[in-house]
Image (cartoon, rainbow, N blue to C red; front, side):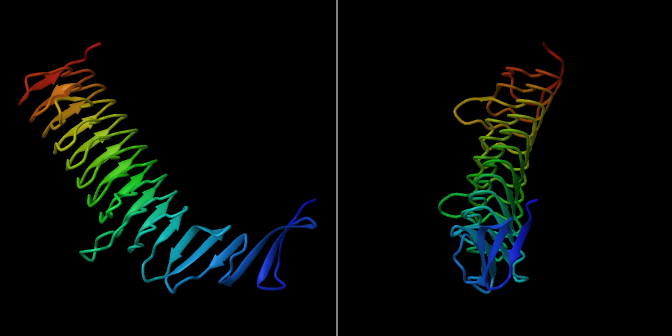
Length: 254
């Protein structure tokens, strides 16, 4: 049968499958082969394939783990995890000592940040393009493809589900759970959206609603911009509501 073997006769080792050389592996720390283990500085050890770094770890000085082409390409920071193509790409440690540190970005371009840099810290973003546009927003939790994709400076947000809090840019202290929950809320704060498309569309040029609780599929859907301190419970509760403030609606609608 076939077997896998590493020929350790020299620094440029071979991976053999059966009788055939499958690939060359360079373990000298300076190699450029098909598979090369590279130590380019005192801080990084990396695995390259055809000259492209796909895996990189830091020393005890920074405790980072990066897996994916150009993950954390700009600044490594400290205690960061980046997994996926361009995850944490524009991470920026310029400024306060904690900027750009203790982030977890997992998924295609998750936590990529803006071209001017992403100084956010203590963020967790899991899913394709989650927290994509972040520039300084910190202590956010985004789980789901495109969750918090537009967030730039918003803080303390929780977004769980596909495209949750999609349009949020500056909003803070919001919780959105369910596909498209809180979708158009841009700068509103203190909201709880639970259910598919709950709080999902806010009428007006800028979707801003504040301190609302909307629980149920489509709860508070298409509520008027500026809605404040409402509680809607039930599927479609408060749907198309135009009276803005201080309402309690418990209702299930077909």
